[in-house]
Length: 149
Image: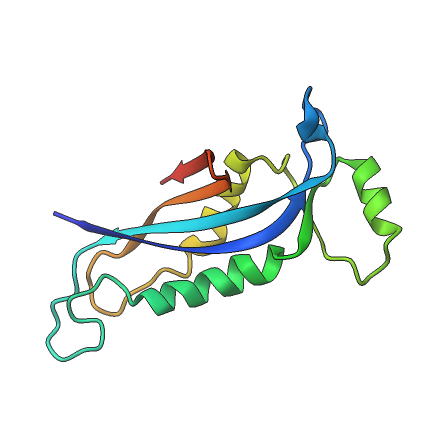
């Protein structure tokens, strides 16, 4: 049996889907929710801080903040092949936060990217088979994408 927990952060981030046939091809932004779902066994080591948990929620938050929030909050995520957007963003100078990625920044691709950023940082010292099970990205209140191991 395993237990699962989830923890999320939110960012204000811009993107565009350059080859999309509708309005998503335009520069726009979202209030993204980045949600990690961990699974494993509850820590049973007596007397440790994490007894009865998979991982302390504040530790999960710290990882999400460092490797997702602090990278993409108030920035624009752009596909490396989107030359028009890169040129426009470059004209704003070095003070603009641009994150260039090797994929079209859809919710589906961002869920996989976020999983890969976080996965190596989910560790435990208690042998409780802790691992990142999946990563969920909410682009709008009605639109989610999930990447599962």
